[in-house]
Image 1 (cartoon, rainbow, N blue to C red):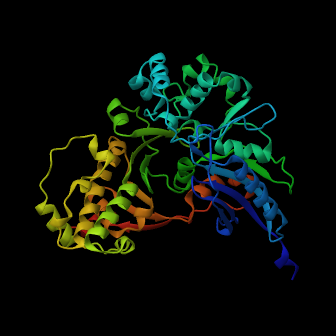
Image 2 (cartoon, one colour):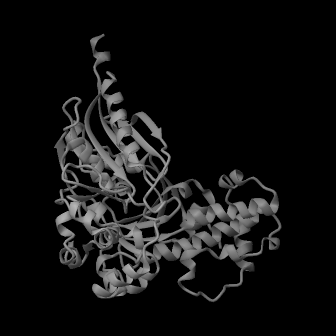
Image 3 (spheres, rainbow, N blue to C red):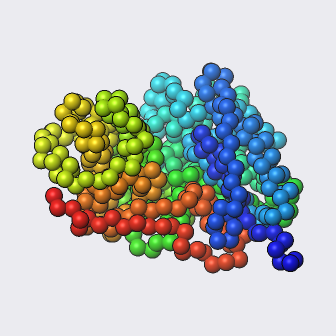
Length: 465
């Protein structure tokens, strides 16, 4: 009988998105044994722009941990964090936040932006070296530069600027670190050619404000009361989602992570970015072992949502029903025959699909219009994926997220890449699992799992056009 009451060893992962803040407990088989989701009301910064409520987030983490520690079913062995990127918390010498967590969509002052790029070699060369397209506040390094120039008094008081995952980790461990996956996501801080901070970081006195870099599998003892457990240093979410794939598959692959943005991540492509690629929304991330990952992105999930509303309104259909629409190769063949190829204008393809300009009266049914939308989105997707695929030995594409469940998207994608194996990959909570896998040794007595990703193969052979 005594055996049943033994607590299950688990890892706790805080997965903090812009909208949902989640806590998961995984057992040693990487199954979710506990889950809790919270949503907080945003607050505003001093300019009235919406921003994350840091205090709510902090209290919620402490409350959730207390609840989990009280639960006798579980024994927490380790804790790790994964959050959205481009988010900095400025802390003073006592570890207290000095300013709001500014939203990465906050407009960036034009004059300051011009001054920055003029001082460090111009937009093109600088973006190229730092693998960071010019994105204003989405470049978190520029948020620091702004702080220094607009609020010099406050800047002097900063002990460290921590990316959000590392701030959350600090709350529990009391240890201050930076991590490469956060530094490596379009921050304009990292020189991908020298594999070190860009010289502007030293020149502007920013380097002193950045905590020392620790390896991604580094763990610290906890300062927060509870049992004896280890704390990881946290991850940028896109990089965490890649970890399960890197651990499970040795053959070169591309991960197409689909959501609002559809991001093609190629961890087997470390060629430097070209100016043309940067203009077309390509970037590099640093993966958890510090190697560059070439990536390209399309706003396809967002575009799909907008255009499906347009189709539903025009035909009086139901937005939800299209998601499960059955793939009809006959419709695709007909649409391909009728379609007049337009002269390609290059950069527009990334911003919006051709479908947004199509007249819906030209389609007999909503199902035909929906097939056309998917055809346009996949064409756009192929151009983006091709940018990070070319010149590499990739044999497989794994698609995860929303579009992996869309039969029309998957069939069209596999037809577009007949020389590659295309799989829909599903795993519950890839981001959280990645953050757990990265510190596997600190909490798990079992070997690394090899069955946590379910794959469904889409063969290009079943297409006749």
